[in-house]
Image 1 (cartoon, rainbow, N blue to C red):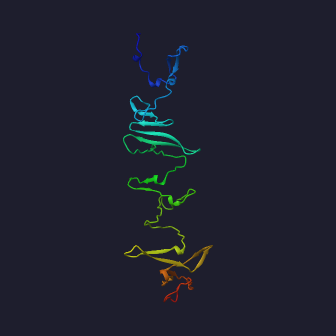
Image 2: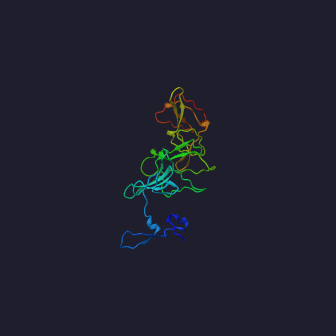
Image 3: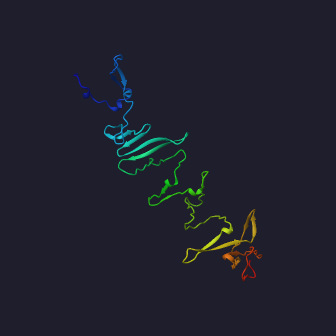
Length: 270
């Protein structure tokens, strides 16, 4: 067999080459004879590289691989896109590990976590973000909503417990300024806070009518009383500040310093 140049030798397949492969090595120290070395001894480090030209890349895809801009950081480049990992200290007991997106041709670059099949994305810890950064989008991406927590006060974490859904599998939360029909609810409210508003045409003002339940009918149980407000038990009166006084019993108790003006009472209230 004739002499062949190294460049003429057949290339060994990657599957047949491991870190245990042996190569002869010429040692520059004359006191140390030539030795052998393993392949993994020869590759202990690579160049830092850049996003466009990673220090460790693929032979036929030179802009895809690993690179590093600063010590103790790691970048993953794949074409125009990429990810970058950094670490920073928060205090003596906490640090931040930041995963950032990179893109050379787009101003904005999203990060999408996409599980396979019916898999899920799980977080084994507290998920914390600012309210303005947490947004919900419907399945058509035409409506977006977010939560505002600035009014809940400072201190301990507030817990909002969702009610039991007694019918079907969905329910609707009640808004303070939305038009909604409320059913199946028990509402506890002080009668001084119960009022009916009537807009005044042509103005931004409203007439407010108050209901005062002052006559005890019967005691249901400890601390609870039952009142009758059927139509035949209500008598409309002219009172100061346009108040309505519910007369529900034969004995009528009036508020101090309130006076009736020309009252007209039926012989039988009940």
